[in-house]
Length: 412
Image (tube, rainbow, N blue to C red; front, side):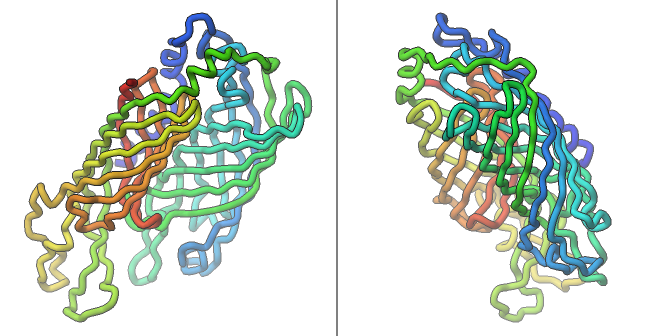
């Protein structure tokens, strides 16, 4: 299973750029070059970061075998990427937009407790305010995996359980970034960043790790390109025209389930939580009619249909002597199905789309909180075909499952 997860993770990251060129070279406006028909501006460089570990779990507060709080981490990364040629359609419409891949190492100064995880991720950013020709404020997000966590479960007699519980977790980050061009080839960037690691409820425990900190990076531009001030009025008008499209996506994942029961027939409030042995399959379909408000932002509703094999287990628990284990009566297929309506907002760029949604299950919300949220990244392999990597949770804090899938965009 660990090998499968590692192979899957490497595929998700490495497939990004090898297939994107096909989509970007098919410009709708033949008079303006598109995608990689002209050489992008390539850059690379190191980045160092220091983070404060937010003590959201007792493990980080000192409830661990060392009895020592975990307060900070140090990391170093190497990132490389590109900006679209300013004479291409993407370069004109998304001035300063950049994207790339990064690898990094991190230490928490408690190697026996946390290990020294390595990060592999994609990133994207863009300026949104300029303070002159060389200084600007922008955003940057990261999405990928972290591998190499020290995650072993400690025996019950010791009273400790690692809060991550898997060797591989998701690695997500969002940053506010100040950049200054020292010369035409060298750039310096200081960022305020928030970071989250989670195993996506594929294993218990899953309290995750949250951190906030500062990063300082320098990058070298191999082939500097002057930004053009010209943008075709027709191109801008077409890109910002309101247009409808429909995203149809299928996804799947695996998860573990926590149920709340009282084996002693007492009436505690709330009932104790117990981990159901084994992992359970999840599969879903999402149909999302969406309107693009402009080249950057799209909004719309979605219909979400989920099959969760672990749904309704709590209602089917059989009361037996606790030392014999946990037993359940059969759960019908109907009870394992839930359906909801959600509202979505999407940040749309040529390769990636970052989508956030909030929804409510109107069919069979049993076994989970009906109010749910999702955060996904769509990576377009062609103009319409995309891979989806995301996460669904409830109440903005309770993990549900990953959303790993494939989708197709029908443009109307």
